[in-house]
Image 1 (tube, helix red, strand yellow):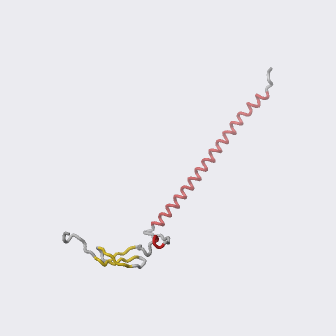
Image 2: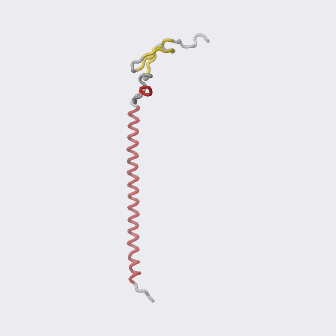
Image 3: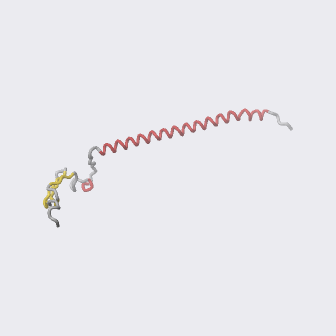
Length: 114
């Protein structure tokens, strides 16, 4: 090994978790602070806990709610468009029936020539 290029190694570096748990390990830093450890991590404890860093969970929830509102509004617009299209078809059928009826009645009212 070359001399002077490697960091100092601390064989008894102290690790401190945010839950208060501490232990020692080997590291290039004398003291390490961590957010989670095997004592408080949800995978090991079986509880569901959200560790929110800088409001990321709140931002995600807001984006999710905004997306759901947008989709609901889009669904309403699509349903309104379908209703409008059906109403337009119904009106066209009514106009067609109205224009067809007088011609059919006049043909029926003329006597058959035999």
